[in-house]
Image (cartoon, rainbow, N blue to C red; front, side):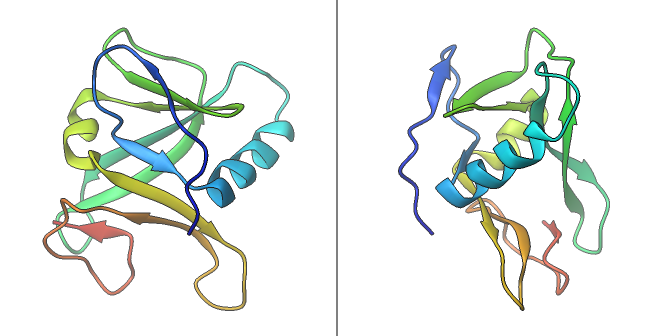
Amino acid sequence: MTITSQPVSIGSKPVPVTLTDAAASKVAELLSQEDTDELALRVAVRPGGCSGFSYEMFFDSEIADDDVVREFGTVKVVVDPTSADLLTGSTLDYADGLTDAGFHVTNPNATRTCGCGSSFS
């Protein structure tokens, strides 16, 4: 996991989630396939999953005034304030292989994770 892209800070809030180069590259590739340039990657934490919370990621064109916004190269990442508290210090990585392919969040705030790897508490 290589993190060489430095986030561009917008505002004074801490960076809730950092993208590795692999994740930023994959998100940029996926964004290039969309019909609009106004999309950002929204990373959120929602109640649910087998451990209490689950991660959610989707492209979003709406950014609220209180969202935490960071840029990793050409990729804009948006996190709502509640999710930011639960994600602070996290890293989003991407792997492309036979096993464990896809996006993966490493969250230092998680005290327990489930077997599927998509929920935590």
